Length: 341
Image (cartoon, rainbow, N blue to C red; front, side):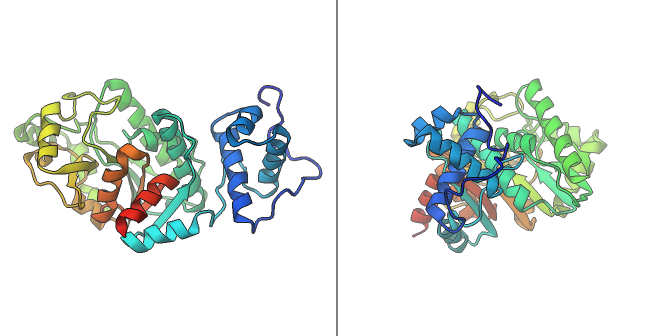
């Protein structure tokens, strides 16, 4: 229990049926209340204030979430809450899948990253990873959060979980990335394949020298052509914490040059323009990681991203076909559908 409140997971002997499973507006409210309480760890009184409800109604909605099976270890988002919006994304961009949830009351970027990570975890609990070789961008904060809360995928036996990019950022971030790779491997019954070389190097010659003397890195790189599924990071052309300019990452000057050439975002540090086309530059030769062509060849590429500052980058990633499955928030999904018109 938290602050003397009864959790919705403690099911009452006679649940109060406050909504019907076919009432989509009510189901959205039940799911939002469950999300705020169980995922964001908000008090019932805080949820009530945020949504303009009485605390007693919040309590009943939490009981309903349990009785309908929405709340398990994680919050399971009922299918069809934003079916029209999801189908619009699939039709407009030729996506393999889309999963959308209302995160409009997110108050900060850290909260957005946490919410998106949990949203991906709920999606994967219903649409598990089934590939033999699974790639992951383990330095992504959102993907790290998703793996942290993800449950064991029963009956899934992958061969390898592969890091798709070398080390970026400070040492502690690299350590967290390695832990995430190992955790996803445990969840899928796979072996870990790490890429313990810099994600961005200072010169083409240094890249060649590093790979020449690192058989483990060469083995990992060789698996990229055989990936069945990939958890992909979509980013902007900025240095976001905990990354540091020039420390196994691009310098501010290099990022400015990419933007000058038309870059609006990047997928695994591969820059793309406003229409999703690759930015051809020497910076590509400094990255040790999966290429855009290898991502396009991967049957299922899943990205989780959202928030206004990433709208342009997300649009470019799906318009260019570098990602075929998107997990995102309602506001971002509306932006994408409107831009596709």
